[in-house]
Image (cartoon, rainbow, N blue to C red; front, side):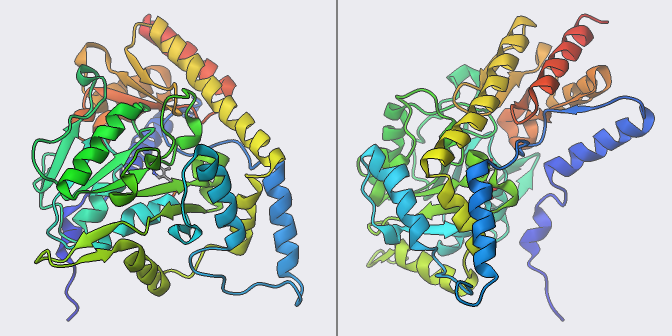
Length: 412
Ligand SMILES: *Cc1c(COP(=O)(O)O)cnc(C)c1O
């Protein structure tokens, strides 16, 4: 008899966005004439830019002739893309990496979820709270997170990020083996100033902690003082992995391409502490066994983002989304909401009025204004009393959503 991995039974069998979709469907059934505006799900809406489309067409044509057809590629990615990443995302910011430290992936979700596999099941885990659910769930699946009671996992250390601490997590006063940081942050849309990030790196170096740094929203940073990469901090090469994705940068959510940086100095210890094992080597080995590379067409598409036209076009789309964010920040602020984030990230994190619980507010706004948000508590206990609004929508929808919320709040 095949026995199930019972750690899977401890995690929610539905995903936050499935719960939301169910509630929205119920509303649509009872209000068939109402058009619901969704500011909820974190998917992009604008099409791929022309430079990317052109590169993809060309790559598809290459696949159609014997001479230029490509089969299995190198499992860690093609050098044309790794070189473009190295030059544009790192050397241009004064960060030196070796090309072999860049592992092309099929999106950051896979790698942020998979990387923990290199670490023993009994390492302790720390996360900022609220958080992208993948980090905890992937640890829970192998039993590292303990058991979940009232939305809290017994073996996870939570670093609350709330309006009270300005969304800056407090450095723990004891050792944690693995820590997930995501900046710019999903869901709060807030960023970590360089000085704060430096403190996390120093903490990690002192405690032999591994930082798993998710920089999926790096392209949305507007403030020049905010770090784009954790490797802008001295010593980070010895304590951090960095995950990047073209999903939000260039609308690749349906194309699937990103990358993970694993520096060669990065190690984890054997249980008796006698040896330090290279995580670069282990990750390479893991990928060689379980991953066979990202599609050639997707990698050519990603390469095109780094051309002069590609850069300009990608920037235009990001500016469009950030225009939405600025517009909604202003509108919600005028309605008296306490609004956070949205300056260096495509997310607004908003306090519910009068401390209404997240799900209750979600339903009230759905039924009162036919606007969908994401309940903050879905991202962790510290998200209770907040909701998330995304800037990934059409400007006209943002306008109409804000008008509807305004007239609903005024009781009209
Ligand atoms: C969207 C997102 C990603 C990227 O996921 P992909 O698999 O690359 O599409 C990674 N991390 C966070 C926090 C995200 O919100």
